[in-house]
Length: 485
Image 1 (cartoon, rainbow, N blue to C red):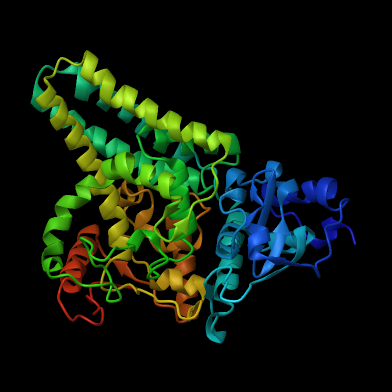
Image 2: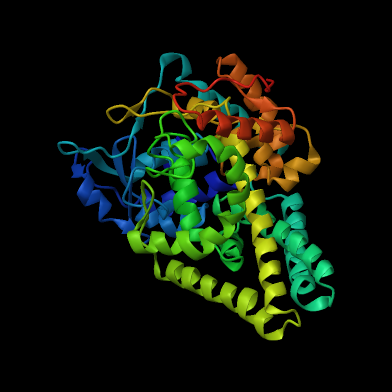
């Protein structure tokens, strides 16, 4: 049977995939699917030119497809490891039929080993994501639009990057008045945050453009503002999106013992956390600068981000990582220090204000989605989570301010965070259109969908949750009753 009989092209991706398989894969039979591979042997194939992945306990050698992958570098973001949830959430259903051509056998875990913590699919939820994916895919086919390319996003990118350049100039070089410069530093902080929640967020999720080179380039805008796009992808795409709000597995809610914060009933309690709803409001402002000066280097040193073991950096990724750090140091610190007419004290204040604004925006946009009384915090038991992956994304996530043009664009679509978690490869400018599809399907399958009516109600819920988790002996998370839908 010809490969084009197996998969009917539905958009550019499937057409490319079909041609690629005819040319590269169909003519080169894979190894016997009866072969078995240990986790250790699969883990050795962790580079773009030697790329194996595990999906649903099967091993796939996708090396030949790496140069043609429509999602660019995302294909090897977790090479040598389990990519089940990443594959399912990023690919249309028809791609699953193509995948078999790459199968080279099954993975066999040794005693005490586990490829990854597995999601259990209750019978009632088994078809939830399949049906939802079919409906969302149909939306884009019917309207003849790409799920990634969006003129709105290109215009938005130009505005953000222009604002970044102008506000940087205004902060450090334009005005003799400190207060005018300080006002510009606030705008600069907003623009740097917008790079984080909008441009790089979509680009590093593979949701920006069909042009993978352009997408990779725009993903490095995060490096330009000081943080590492590679580390962000490892923490956010690989860790957070796979195990959202799972205690001990989601790096976004990881804590030490002791730690400055406690966000779930499963985490250790310290007496000073009774005040975390007060002091975290201030500490959130340090998020951006902490990532730039501490977290990225710590991850390079330890080879991990909390529970996530980072992948091996390619030569290009090393160049972007270290080049980005040097570029940020040169233009953001050294250039103003040498050329700005402001005093050292004024410069320090301007640096602090801009980074604090960035930190607050980034922290609050994400915290109101996953750390509130109305979302679930999960625990795995014996390598299994008693949830379907897609239903777990809905349970652990909350939206806010549906229908708001301002919040959709200011938050980079994170006011539709549930939609984003279910479809991370779709550009955020499409979220308002597909949110009703998601909500209707959730209702049909009895999957509760949480929406705060405004950002401010979501923010209130977040700090109320922090206060609640700071109390000794709290065993459950009580709903705030501030949601609809």
